[in-house]
Amino acid sequence: MNIQDIKQDWISQFEKPLVITGPCSAESEKQVMDIAERLDKEYMQVFRAGIWKPRTKPGSFEGVGAIGLNWLKKVKDEYKIPIATEIANASHAKLALEFDVDYLWIGARSTVNPFTVQEIAEALRDTDKIVLVKNPVNPDLDLWIGALERLAAQGIKKLGVIHRGFSSHNKSKYRNNPQWQIALELKDRFPNIPLICDPSHITGRRDLIQEVAQQAFNLEYNGLMVETHCNPDEAWSDAKQQITPEELKKILVDITLRKKND
Ligand code: PEP
Ligand code: MN
Image 1 (cartoon, rainbow, N blue to C red):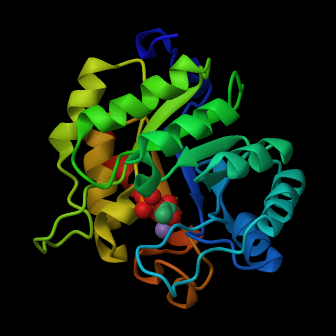
Image 2: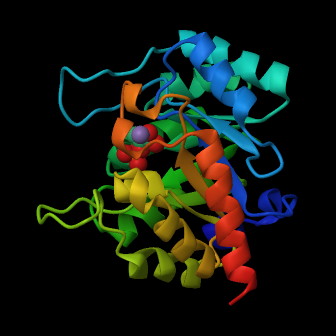
């Protein structure tokens, strides 16, 4: 199958833009359950948490590992919300399928590696789960599209992309420069592939999340992935960019209203 043949229909079931939210990292069963409880399920339809965390430098917290799948499953069972996690190799992919994780995403540090994407694609062959591909850390549109092609070639039909910005040596106000034109070119070439914006990893700062989310919304992205935590400052990873579930709700209400008033 080619990526041109992918259908948008998995996302059209949502009346509002799709919002995937939850902590950068799962830290404990209680932490994920507490966050899930506080989400307004009318606005936030999918729960995310990273359990395998590819970190830039060694010595940082690299995730709780497979035990976190049990916690995610509990979130799904008790709150009836679909769950999402990052997979970075074939064994993560197989475990996530075993635990019936609904949304699997490939992180920016994995999308850059064609062998990694290929082994993940083969492990997920013909899956009915939704697979989201974050842009690679470097601003290379072909590499991003190549990852989609590898997944489509393995019969994976429910695909989407997440725009999380691009690394740059030059410091700007953003942690990862959005370079909107790259994501918009992908949207133009493949209007059938749902496009989700990740303002948390673009900005790296909670005070900028609203403006980036608004921009994505105005550009008619199909959804958002935003990191939330009950005590953002205490988060074990990406503390500066996380917000509370209530802060996210306020942002979502505000950006919807502003768009309507345009
Ligand atoms: C994440 O979503 O927590 C993450 C590590 O993202 P990225 O791959 O965009 O850096
Ligand atoms: Mn993160």
